[in-house]
Length: 138
Length: 330
Ligand SMILES: Nc1nc2c(ncn2[C@@H]2O[C@H](COP(=O)(O)OP(=O)(O)OP(=O)(O)O)[C@@H](O)[C@H]2O)c(=O)[nH]1
Ligand SMILES: [Mg+2]
Image (cartoon, rainbow over all chains, first blue to last red; front, side, top):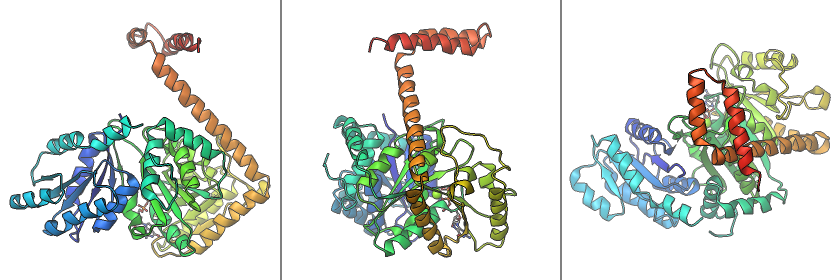
């Protein structure tokens, strides 16, 4: 089976990408191809990169506190490009009580601080339907 | 899958590229057909050691070319980990300013263990991008060692990017990259040592690459030299400040014009075709070997060679004989 391709992006204005890099490395070590786009990505930039890179999933790391506005906008930008089937994962500093709201707005899963990397890897491996679909249709 | 292949339909294009990358039969049939229609796109290889500024340079070049409305594609190839097969593809970080421009398409790919730093599917992806109507297709590869020169098989013009401050030596010389350069760029010309780096490169060129030794890599297109009428220019550029970019674009045009007006263009195409055929031939043979390898026998040979009661060459001969036997009927 081909490796999974995952986009890791940091929406918003905070300047810390340590967490994003740790996730990127963990996914690479699990055999995935990680497209890392760096800091300060707008929802449009993220959706455009997801489109051009034809990824299996998008992972968003967000520390700025703006998750309730920014994350749904990423989902919208993906849908606007016909990419509503791409699962979107989020991590960073997101309070427990915001998770139902985010899930209702199209975020597939939210990983709180301290989630073991293994859990994240396992979850992505089992929640990326695009790969299976692409291979069965070819 | 949609039939459309156009830079104006990036979602479909992205899916075609994925299909090519995974070796989908329909996509490969399409590429074969497309290959037969030569395209006017200029395919430019950008190579150089890590950190020399290849991605930044491509972003700056693309921005300049966009001012003249040219649609531009970028394929950035990064190495896969030989242990996990995974990869971190980070070249888009430097191309952030190109976001939001529908005339620019950027795709990152992992080498997936292919020798020469290029993913096996790169050539076919380039063919698809040419057919999609891009005027310029940039292929970024890391050239870290003597073997990482597969880009010379693919690109019409190879730009080798060097920068000061990467070590005591000029890394492009050390890595054997200047032999494949059509244009040498000393990037980061805003740094004080850039002049000196450019002088060292120019000196190495004048010596006919003697500093790295001339090993006639048969399957590789040779570097152009004065005899054939192309002098490899050494250009000082600052990708971050945008300095020297006009001269670089002019050199790219001149190189292409020279290829078209001299016999070298055709000769280069022949060398590249031959190298590409060889690469695919070896890949097909490798697939046969994988398919028909006698695993039980392999295990026996492994034991024998580990105990040094047999030599690995004997093992390979015997295993190959078995593979050839197996594929003979077809
Ligand atoms: N001073 C200066 N720094 C530059 C210039 N161009 C690139 N850089 C810096 O050099 C570093 C590496 O740039 P990249 O464009 O990522 O280099 P690269 O060759 O693509 O690197 P890899 O893809 O990792 O091999 C970054 O920190 C850039 O900001 C330049 O013209 N001047
Ligand atoms: Mg790069």
